Length: 317
Image 1: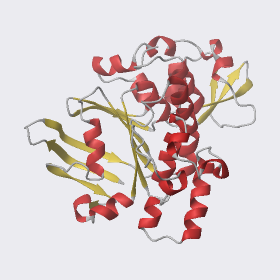
Image 2 (image 1 turned 180 degrees about the horizontal axis):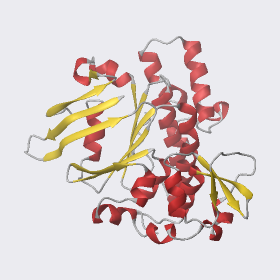
Image 3 (image 1 turned 135 degrees about the horizontal axis):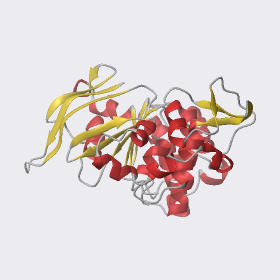
């Protein structure tokens, strides 16, 4: 879907923002770019929609160089959600969401229907919110409108640049959990920038950790937790290693087993949480067994949520 081929970016002052990036982001994947300030993650994101131009190398979307696209059409087909939200203050919520469909000459009835669908999707009742101005909404509600606006013209790709970091902790956690459910419904290729490892572990299908403009490790949340490449990666993972050594028996109630769902893969309740995570690189759910009886089904989502709930800001348990 999105391919970085030996991509580098050097600014006019000589700063090397990123160096020799080779990344393959798959269609429908939630791909997270993470790292400290100045590591190049936001530059990497902004090169996809040509807000920053590539210095060397190339970026392809479905095998076609981004430089061969008309820049306006490229951006219309890539949704973009910012930390600052950037809603137009004098326009209603409906008008903010309708901008790109109007630019693409959609019919008015189709735009109205789409606005209502999207407000429902992000948890805002259309008749209550669509005629309001952004100043009448909370920060969390405004960010939901920002997500709806990015989805308005049904683009295949969504870019999200630290969209939740300006929110208070409660709003941020609520949006993270809502977006975890939302991403399954929208079925988009999402590239998401964050500095927060527990946010990355909760939301990402795969994570790319960067440092000084270079890639340190790319992998699934399970691979990061169970097989950190070096001490730098371990510092981002934090002290999750200790909780991974505990047996499932000691945390089943908090993990939350599903009694309705079924899974063909059976594992003993005595295995450690770390061993369970290894199964989730191949399975979305596993059946937990004790004394040859099923206790219920444990899902990948529940395990990552458990790790999220046992994390503090910055990725430490």
